[in-house]
Image (cartoon, rainbow, N blue to C red):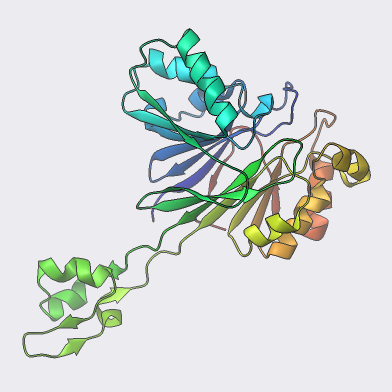
Length: 306
């Protein structure tokens, strides 16, 4: 089974505390690392979790509030000291690209790797694609231009049945065609159905990251039927008016999004500093959507098992 792991590096809200760091996650796609937001201190937890700087290739910044991007200058500087090679692409708004470029000019001279920028906009847009996944932005409702990110695996190749390919004497040069779903025609003209020679591919998984945002029908539509959803739950249900005023969500609202969208699993995070424990938030979310778990620094989730 191909690797698809989510690593939680930070799940607190704007103010770092002794319990939680600001927002940051790293998605491991077949040993290629993609960072989602980069709050301050992210590089320390990345090292603690033994995630290699050398494998970090993309950084996705949801919006330009400090608790989601202040870790970038230190991370870039540290990767330079570690003599990272190749390139890192930062997906951010135009103002973010300008800020990071100015920071690099001031503090990070002669980087041993290239920093590329992909300027993103609000709305729904395909912003990245490779042979394994696509990444699409999700429109969120916050105080500044903000997007979430939807990661979808591409269709995978079918699995070969060696016993059957040997039985029908399939030449090695046709194996790839079988993995892509084609039938096999013997030298005598007999058509052997692909289903006889192969088995179903692994399921394609999907993961959506939504922080920071008010509860939104647009989010519900964007994440319909996905496997895993991370949705901010800054406050408990009693503080719904405060959440609305600050353009955030409660635990119950996050769970409602998950239920209405028909997702398989929900992860809640972006917890306010007011809580000494998030068990209240978890209970409120599970009352509406039982398949809910709490984010926590150091947590690694196998997204192949929704």
